[in-house]
Amino acid sequence: MNKKILVVAAHPDDELLGVGATIVHHIKSNDKCFALILGEGITSRYGKRDLADVSNIEDLHKDTLKAAKVIGYEKVYFENFPDNRFDSIDLLDVVKIVEKYIEEVKPDIIYTHHSGDLNVDHRKTYEAVLTASRPIESYCVKEIYSFETVSSSEWNFEYINSFKPNYFVDVTFTLDKKLNSVSFYKSEMRNFPHPRSIENLEVTAKKWGSVIGTKYAEAFEVVRIIK
Ligand SMILES: [Zn+2]
Image (cartoon, rainbow, N blue to C red):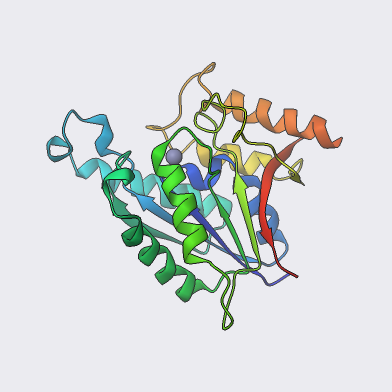
């Protein structure tokens, strides 16, 4: 109750795919939820970054804000790190940005990517979050969780660092809102059997629901809890 939640995502739509229905849950509990989206999410679609049509970035941000309104996010912060090229940036530059927003929001809980995702931006985001939220005496983020991002978490075919959830949220009554909001991302969503399809999001929620005995669930890995 009355907690502050920060979702740190690499790309527009990541703030919904693995955590959207849980965010609706938080909002129902009077928590305030914010999203920080670090990358612009567009330019990797072009042969060269400088050939990209930047008006597409603005359109994508508009989709993000429409989707965020359905979910109930208080605010979405946009940074414009280059899509799928976070490995070309000094990690410290990403850390500084994440630190700036942690300082501003002062979140009790952070949700971010999984360290083993296939997508390099996701992995760098995870590293930056962990670095930016290292526990210090004056202030520290009490809880950090990794969410699953379909089309990245399962596409890293590696056993050692695969997504192995140990924290689940029953989203039986909030999944609808997530699926409605995701539909605003017309440029990001695909048709089934692509993992980033409405059908797969429902199937994934059903699968995690079956693990914990509910109709639908979202699944997380606990990174850190400090009580
Ligand atoms: Zn992503």
